[in-house]
Image 1: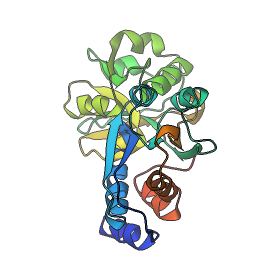
Image 2: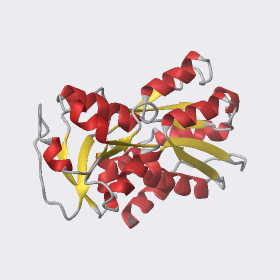
Image 3: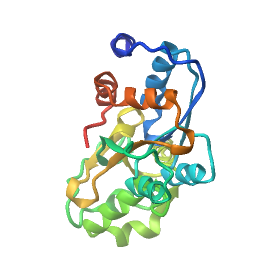
Image 4: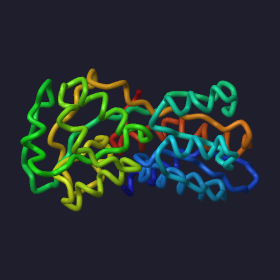
Length: 249
């Protein structure tokens, strides 16, 4: 981690930006990496970066309602398109920044490993328990999970036993606590927890591509927002994202 912090501080470009606050909305799965990036950039530019993490749907609705976010990084392209269709994004600022992988996790004391192919034995894994993931109606990881489970023909088993959480991190916590025998999260979420292990990786062909679009918000366009947005596109930030397990889209 010390190496990462050195990389951030040496690679941050110099700037004469006037100090002002910046609010950044980001998907819950980005919590640790965005905290690190924003802290380093904020110190270098004497700027307080306020981060708000939640399901992408909730964040998009807040932006539509006039929230003061200057930068938005979501785990669901559909909600970026929702804002774009309402002319709420700065023109030409949207870019697909990151990618991720969908995984099935269990508590760390469960050594089971599964090949996630059609009709895999989800019922045996769950036993009398339930399966945690984001609510497919509102939370990106749940949307991807539903698509994958349907593709692999186990949705009929999963649907009545689904614990629909309000974020991917809430699903992760349920598995960490042993309240459910399994959950579906992103690989980057599994990587930051010592209390879960990856039992299987969903084929990328079983669900839509997991892409994190980045954009600036037109109503809150400022030099600070542009500078932080540019930093997130930099090689220094890319190296940190990759260290946390995110990949190029």
